[in-house]
Length: 515
Image 1: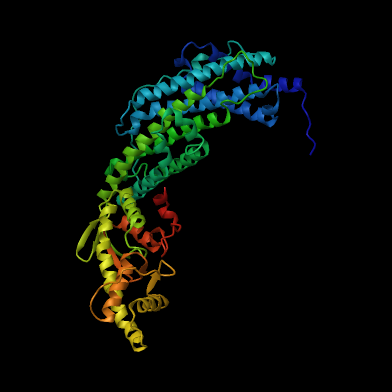
Image 2: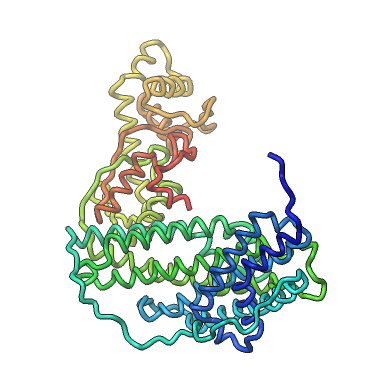
C-alpha cells in the first residue's frame, strides 16, 4: 500500500476545525489563576473528551512522527492524561464519605488535595504551552466562547433514599468468604507494590522501571476492577450487605485501591513514555512540563503508599471476616516426602495459614503444632524421624535382608550395610541422596548381632541425610475447611518439591505462595 503525504495546509485546516473546542478549553485553562476553577469534574470531563478525540485524530495522521506537529501531539497527550488522572483524584475525593474506609497512618484527604494541586499545575502549564504552540502552527484560538456556568459543580448535600427492594442470596457466608478470599489473593499479588512503598527516593526510578512498571500496575488495576465488578454484580443491593456490615467497608477498600491504581498507572505511563523525551519541534524557551523527581514523588508517596496502606488494613478485615464464618474440619495428608517438615514445606504451610489469618493446628500422634509457625512445624520432624527409623528397622527385619547376606557368608559390617541399602532402594523402600554412598569413617561401635549393627548403621545414614525412606507417613490438620482445602492441594503437589527437594510448579490456585 502506497502512503500518501497530506499537505500541511490541508492538515492545519482540519485540526483548526476539529480542535476548536479543545483549544477554547486550553485557552480558558491557561488564563485561570486558581486550580479551584479547573479542578471540577464537568470541566475535566470535557477536557478529557476533547483531548482524547484530538489525540486520536493526530495519531491517525502520524503526527507523533512529524517534526512540525509532534510537540502539539505531545501536549495533547499530556492534557489528556492529566485531565484523566485529575478526574480520578476528584472521584476519590468525592467518594471518600461513602467508602467507609478504615483509618490509616496518614491524612489521606490532605494527600489527595496535594496530588490534585500537582496535576492541576501541570494542566495549567500544559495549556499555556498549547496556546503558544497552536499560535505558532497558525491555529485560531477561540476567545470568550466558553460558557463558564457549564463547568461549575454545585452539589446539594445528602444522598437519595435506599428504597429499592433488596435481593436475596442463598448464603451470606459463601458470599463473604468468596470476596474476602479473592481480596486476600489480590493482596498477595500486590506484594511488589506494597514493598515499593518502603523505597527511598533514590530508588524510585529503578522501582518504576522494574517491579512497579506501567505494565504491572495496569495488570493489577484490571484485577481489582474485576473484583469490584464481582461485588457489584453479586452483592450490591442484596440482604448480605445488611446482615454483614463489613461488606460495604470491603467494597470501599476495593474501590479506593482500584482508583489509586489507575492514578499510579497513569503516572508510571507518563514517566516511561514522556519524561525526558526530546521533541524535535519543542520550543527551547519552555522548561519541561513535568519534572521526573516530582512525578515519581507523587507516584510513590501518594499512589503507591496509599495503595499499600489500604490493602494492609483491608487484608486484616478480610481475615477477621473469614474467621467469623469458619467451618471447622480436619484433613489427613501425607508428610512431605523429602526430609519431612524442613524449611520449604514448613514455610509454605505457615505462609498459607497466615494468608487466610485462620487458626490451623497440625496433629501428629497426640502432639499439637501451630501451623502458622515454621518453627513449630520443624519440631514435628522429631516424631517423623522416629517413625521413619522404626519403619526402616521393621522393613529390614521383615524382608530378612541381613539373614540372606549372613547365609551367603558375609559378616563384614560395611559391605553388608551397602548391600542392604541397595536392596532397599531397588525395592522402592529407600531413596539415595548420595551416590556412591559414603559410610561414616568411624564404626558404629555398637555391640550386638549383625542385624542390630546394620540397623543402627543405616539409621545413622538416615540421620545424616544420606538416605531417606518413603514410609507413607501422614499427619492431620484441623481448622477452617477453606484453608484445609489449600493445604490438601499443597500436599498433593508435594509441598512444592519432588522427592529430591527440587522445586516443582504449584497449581494456579496456590500461586500466591510463590509471591
